[in-house]
Picture 1 (tube, helix red, strand yellow):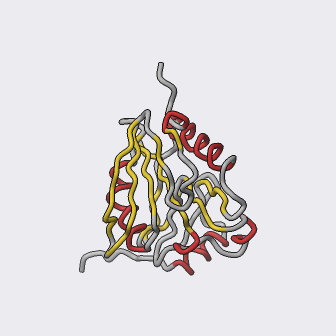
Picture 2 (cartoon, one colour):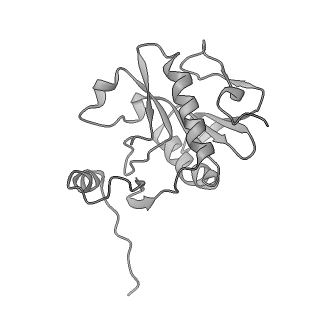
Length: 186
């Protein structure tokens, strides 16, 4: 008999985290019931994420806040997007991580993880009904903007390149210049 993969539920995942089964510095996430190790974060990735946190934190209304590399709860997954803009104040999530209805925007920052973010995580976000996802492609200095999820896929995709701006659906008054979050040109 061939081996069978053992998938975990969110309750089992929560129990493992609470029991301290994983080292604090270990970068892991639960994807479709499987525990996956994430790639280390390089300097450009860390810089872009920090710039996004700084940019959004200074501009968001009090009805939303920035979460950085923290879990969100999907059906049988607990991914850790680089940025999640969630409804309400941070204190709202002391007892439970945000669920799809709480998420106004997700942002993944990618270099080596671009394929994984687009092929694995993006369909999870679409299936969960998360209204907007951006994937920052550091290598090509562009952002893929995904909107209008339906039947497990996003029906609208646009690409914004360096020099352009991108505006979140939830905050039409905000226009993020990509040059503010990409590495400076040499």
